[in-house]
Amino acid sequence: MGEFTDKLDAGGNKIAGKAKELYGDATDNEQLEAEGKAQQLKGTGQDVKGSVKDTLGDKI
Image (cartoon, rainbow, N blue to C red):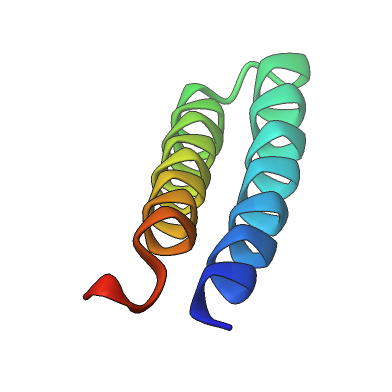
């Protein structure tokens, strides 16, 4: 079940991060744009973590 929550959180972070990045770009707010990119990266990491948990399953 942990892999599902990781992937769900990943999706949320990717969407929120993309929105921040686009808003930061539109308003020339470099800090907000960078925060958005970082949040998307966090989402990617969570997605990988969920995939690893899914692959390993009960082996860990």
